[in-house]
Image 1 (tube, rainbow, N blue to C red):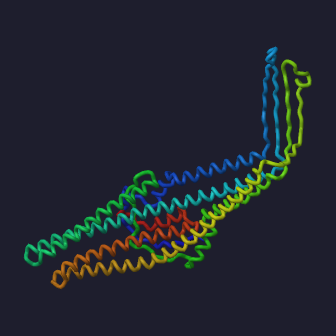
Image 2 (image 1 turned 90 degrees about the horizontal axis):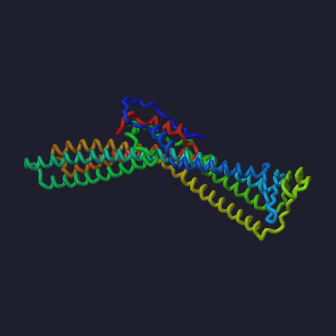
Image 3 (image 1 turned 180 degrees about the vertical axis):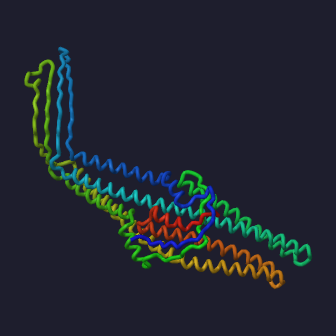
Length: 428
């Protein structure tokens, strides 16, 4: 099941800034530099070699031995050269261990897929975190400028005897508070950009913002349980945890097989030379043997290893259940976030329109004497709050859709490309 993200045609004709970067460009930087993804890939390499080593124990083993001895009495020397070739014919423990390592290799492949999807989600979170911080800074700065203009206007009206000193002081108070909000917004933006640098390893340029017109669509299918079911089937992190449980079961089989006999075939040859060596030893010889080994007692280690494997299996099962429950909760939460985001986009858009009209009316009313300075300052503040709420809702909605796709195991570069189409060609 793929998240069908319908993209409407956006008639945008803005020129692209030379230093601007879009979501895919930043993603390419992050994919090349992210140490978390690189670590997951290195872990996959480690597990692949462990599987190779487990298989090697079932393949022929060939050794070459050379020995030189010296007699302390007469100083004579003798040499012996031999080789030993062996092949396991039956060893259930080694076979089950190989099965476990191959299952863990498959689990690590799934973990790399999960790390790739997590990188997409982390990158999108950081990218839209910067856009949200930029939008907040733009709003607070505009709010500060508006209050600064009101301070100047109030001072002129007071100097002309048209208003009281309290109007000037009230405007100054609102302006001072707005200036503090601007400082906080600047700090938040700097931190958001650092979060993006942490992923890419370099300072990105200006980022493309979302286009003014954003399609607000409910998830499809529109049933949260359908998304939960898909997540339980396709989420690579949960699939990986399921494979780890399978591997732990196979390790129990390997530990139990330590009680079983093993059978191997061997081909040994040796040749000697030196003082005191007979002609037959010089000619050497070759022996073929079948070796049957029956374990009888190992000091209790076999039973201990079997119990240890059982505990590890229980641990893997518990970890799987923890991951399953967390995934169910995350999927439902992101589905509700998308559904709420659609309603929030509509309500905040309506709030911005109403706040703009209210501010225009209040300015006109103050000029006619029907509205006070307090009314105007509150109208400016309300308009800024509405605009900021709408900007945050836009970014939150798009990010929630991506996080829902991640939970369902369907987040990758194509999904980022679809969101990239929602970005404008200009910068904030």
